Image 1: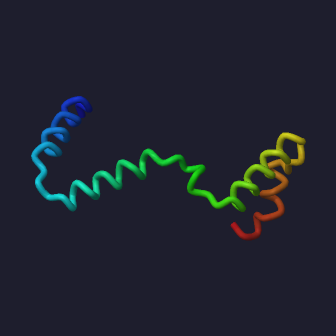
Image 2: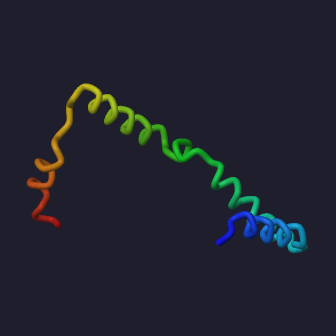
Length: 75
């Protein structure tokens, strides 16, 4: 697939659109792709992630093999 040719076809198609609802959907899609995933988290989720990173920085981690040994019964 020639990505540049596909882009040009999309641009031509977009330029020819007359349906405002399709254009609105495309704008919403574009905005969703531009959004920073971090902003999607609640403040509680962000705090939990940051705490987990801090724990890892302090070396408070459990080796993968140890976790798998403990929870293997549910696999």
